[in-house]
Length: 294
Image (cartoon, rainbow, N blue to C red; front, side, top):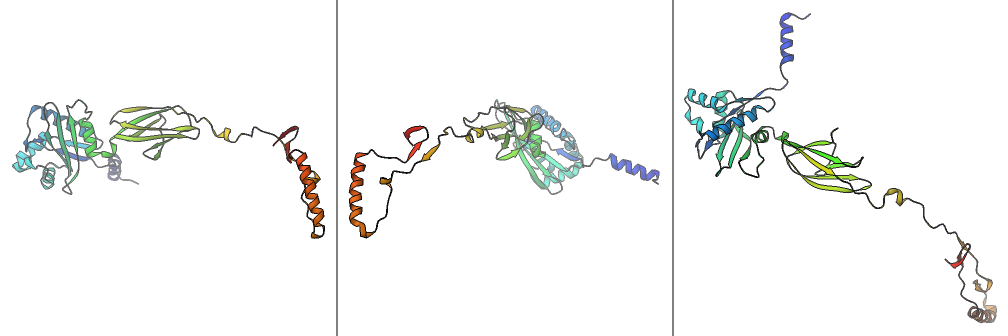
């Protein structure tokens, strides 16, 4: 029988999530080696904090809270870690974080490039880094995408919807066989992917597809049927002519004679030559019901 204390402990254990929540601290962004306190950078920091906080199982320590902790600890050197893993690890321990994200802001005009890095506090080593491009006309990058690349790179994917016009086709992505969902969709890594769709009775469909993060890319697959398919190859032959072989006449059959009747053989040969000269050539093969040759 369970006691009240044991029952409460069991309920607490069941209520605890299976994964441990990771705490990510956002260090103040710098520009040209100094902390960037501009309004645009503060806005950018807020977007990065929001994007990282949206990741599953992630709690964010905002940059403002990190700055306050540095000031209270009277450790101004932690504001200028400049990518030093040991310094960033000490900063993470100060605010109780398991990962510290820091970055350097650069760029010209209206476009910005932010170089972001994630450092593991326990091992004092950089986990990975990425860049966030903002403001360029041809850039589709977002803080959300940068956060996923930095902390959950396996989830940096986009959906691809395949509209295949035949049934029974097989899909290959970069040479590996893939299965589609009930909606004919497949989540693939962001970037250029090699697509091949095959079917025994159709020509292969081959394309390169550019997958975009957070979006669904439509791929219409039009298959072209072969001119000759399998049942035509195994069809019955068109010609049903019956061939009959007929024995040649006696004077055209070969005979073996002994030396004692050599003169007779020579005479027979002369006679056969005369007959062959008088009669037209003979062919021992003809079609039944057809006087023409085979």
